[in-house]
Length: 576
Ligand code: LR7
Image (spheres, rainbow, N blue to C red):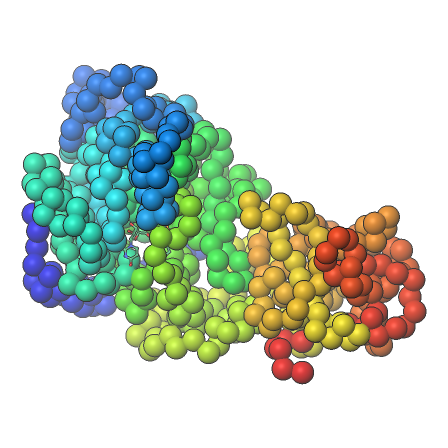
């Protein structure tokens, strides 16, 4: 069914008004939120034959040949040449996903088993679980990845639990998403389509969907996902047990080029962020491992990736839904995670695959303003740590956040310090002492600053710190001198510390020791009054060299001479 934009616009407004008026039970995010993941024991009383009926999905998966392309999540590599190869390349350029291949893989393929085998033993009382509306916003998505998402939800979600799938077209301009999509879904049970009248961005597009949802729980998915068997029950069970829990599935990776379904049944990762306000993944910390009693218990996570989660609809309204001033993409996941109340969790028994495109297929220039909104509303003075690492963010026009600040008051949230100490105790909080952070600039080669590019698929060069023209944009040139005499690279998480190799004399970054562990000598650099950086272990000074290997200028250890090339100073901005 397609709904007119104006009608749905009014409904969205009503939804938002309700959201701010609804006096739902007051919840507070606290470190002692009940953790018990009580089993759906009452279903033990339901005979297996009846459970079988209750578990039935909206549609059964059609039987497929196990050798079919991509079946059971197997990697596919097509041997193509000529015209066909050209089409494949074009599809990747257009979508940043190998859509040529996707179009050749069944929309109904089966996935390999990726959950912990213990998950299979969990029993759910289907009759007592709340129903859900699955909301999928999309913008210019390819046909096969969108519809594989839809079929996968229909073929893995028990009929009794799935109220509907709401597709929200965020003003796409591709022909296949117009009438052909309407015709296609007209034949599918429980699938609705709603269209935005202008490009809303994923926040308002999702809210448009939420405004017409009839299920008790909202489950948001991105539009290029595939759901693992049994993905929905754990989410709904947890929300039934704890209505203020916001629960994410484990996000398995589907390779954008081969469509291989990756992921493993081991311990999933949790979400964090770094001081650029970029979402990060982390191993489950020890304190959380101790708190859990079983590998099937939920895992608390300080933040969420953003695209895949389930939340009680009333609780979502109570929490203030989303910040509707956020445009297109970015920032809403951290903003939502910073809200107080309830708990943010990952359920290890709920797995959903997600295609991570090769790179962003559309402009994400609004992401900076969105992050600034989140920082301004939620981070108190800690926002300065963000601004120090993104000096240009201070200039960003981010609009009016008065209403969001009021929401924070209404929710009675504790301050950001409390959030860091209680919800994300593992994050490193930089000291940023005046004059001791920013670009680390050399006096002799005054155009040059410390620069570090962490190893990644784009940088396989290694771990070295080099010297590069100072750019004043923070990021790779942002260092902090700590009170423990370390030169810390703490723009990204986990925090890195500068070390010197006594043999090669080069500087590189390694993970810092844990707080309260002593600082190793190799990591200690005394920043002396004359600007020299004295390396304690080797008793040498850091000098700027025009070339330390084939083409890079770099800092390296040399006997202390007091020369201007051995003098350094921190500078927050580029102006001299
Ligand atoms: O203007 C837009 N309108 C939309 O409807 C832009 C996007 N969208 C839709 C889009 O078609 C897709 O369905 O919104 C969804 C998310 O967009 P993607 O797939 O481009 O986002 P992403 O996977 O790169 O980004 C992650 O971070 C985003 C921050 O705004 C959102 O929270 C995404 O939902 C989130 N995705 C995930 O969490 C999946 C796992 C990725 C990780 C880590």
